[in-house]
Amino acid sequence: MAENDQRPTYLRRLRRALERGTFQNVRRMLGALHPAEIADLLQSLPPAERKVVWELVEPESSGEVLLHVNDEARSGLIQEMEPEDLLAATEGLDLDDLADLLQDLPEAVSAELLHSMDLQNRQRLEAVLSYPEDSAGGLMNTDMITVRADVSLDVVLRYLRLRGSLPEQTDSLMVVDRGDRYLGILPIHHLLIGQPDATVDEVMVKDFEPIPAISSAEDVARRFEQYDLVSAPVIGPDGRLLGRITIDDVVDVIRTEAEHSIMSMAGLDEDEDIFAPVVPSSRRRAVWLGINLITAFMAAWVIGLFEGVLAKVVALAVLMPIVASMGGIAGSQTLTLVIRGLALGHVENSNARLLMFKELAVGLLNGLMWAVVVAGLAVIWFGNFTIGGIIGAAILINLLCAALAGVTIPLLLRRFGIDPALAGSVVLTTVTDIVGFFAFLGLATLFLK
Image (cartoon, rainbow, N blue to C red; front, side, top):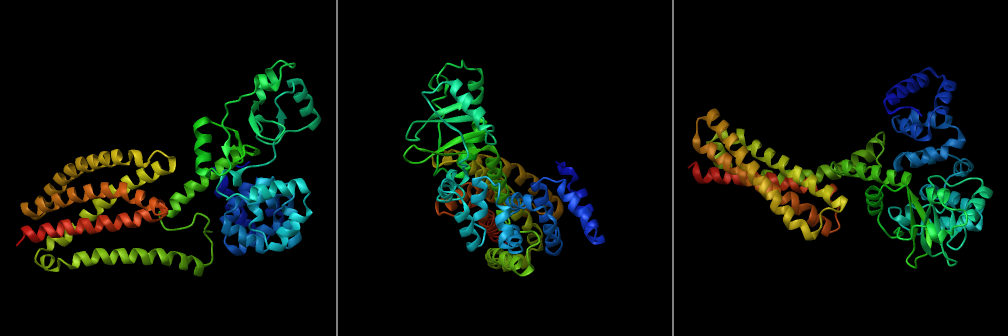
């Protein structure tokens, strides 16, 4: 597999080969790459070149490649494929991966695919599809090995030899009763080092908590992180074993969550294709720009209220951006901390008040320190102690308000069902701008008469 730092080199070589028309070289390059690396390269190419390269990808790799590209790029690639090619691409995919891909396939292709599957696999696939994509049920894979508690380890070993292979990421076998209700797990190392005549019940781990199928993907990722899991069983509401989640799926969840947090800060979708058509990209971003424009006019309206004092004292116009900027940065620090805490489950209603007092204390300490610094610089710059005192007080007020807003905004947004990562920064900027301008210009109106 190619190293990450070789990706720019591969991209340059690929584009050079495309420009020269040496498609055989392109095909050989793609054949030496992992499907995830091919997906990464495809997302780095503009649509015309992407289409050419996609046609050169080996058919047996196309399904895996489709799984690794983002949703928007995947939709574009699927539109370029014939139905029979799409059906061929699904061959050999795990059921959990097939469930992810099936939702993006044309309805006719999906129906034909389901019709071609045997009854057992179709029922397993439908079980995965019955749960939301971002839940434990949507992440699980039904490919697993189950054993009964009353059989001996020797019987289990002979059964595994007859199978000839194990599902990927198998570190434990699942122990169930005759009704397929979950009882515990049998770690592979317990199986290998245990006495052959010992029963599964004697060596199994009975206190290994399964994951309910309705659990969120974030909860699943948190559990894998906390307990360093490779796989974990998934159960239904009746306690029956439905499947298992493996670490490779959890890594995808973690990456998706990270991309979501980064892209949401700018009002973008993590599945947006960087080479998406201009008009749709412009339309998506226009909404966010429009929201930002409204908030900017609100701040401008506050400034307009103090037009008289601004006209008399030019220094206020020069210093005004400093107040808003300091509040914005301080608020963003608190906002980021709280959003991360919410995502990790570290911030709840029970400890939110303590966190607020702590952030207010930090805001007070930083506010006092930087108020003195900025006030001193303003006095040196303009030779006016009153202006220095005004901007110092305004910075202190704004940093305290920024700390308060940084804690309360994400909590309130979450309560109303709004993603804090998506809307938090815009609301925070509006609050710190308005409070900063109002405090600075309001104090100036009182003391610079």
